[in-house]
Image 1 (cartoon, rainbow, N blue to C red):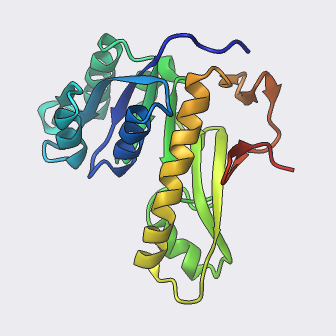
Image 2 (image 1 turned 180 degrees about the vertical axis):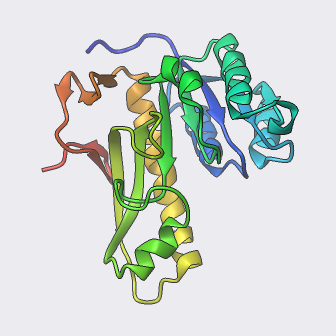
Length: 225
């Protein structure tokens, strides 16, 4: 797979404070990720990600789902605006909505999401609580390609951490968050470099089909043993 020579045009979707967007923004400013942010879009006018984008000079978009007759109409309008931005990659960074399949289909293979669990475990909400209630010894985060199945698209990469005896839901979330940021930055960097792609529902890394998700270690993403 050939590497890219131009910066990858990225749009971010976020409903909340935007910590994952902030991590990507910092990585771009440090020269670690060859990307250009073309839009940050949200369904919440008070989302912190919008303020971050505005302060960084990144265009923003807010669409209120209540202004549309149903989810499909909202999603088609939103994704139409995303297409108009010229984005080549969409990053869901805490975007708390299930997306209509018709709106999503043109973006399959060009849209990723970060999820705070070791998928396929704990799709959906309250992942830290569910890991603790299950008595898991290990927890983590996953970046996956987005499909119409909730948190069910092909997993690109994961980061793992040991659950400690003193962890409660809040502490576990706090300890995982910095690892989520590093994982997302590493995946976006490799997509921007032309190393990662989705072909026939299979994740390709440097032209090689992956049997298991990549793992994030201190020196970056590596192929799992």
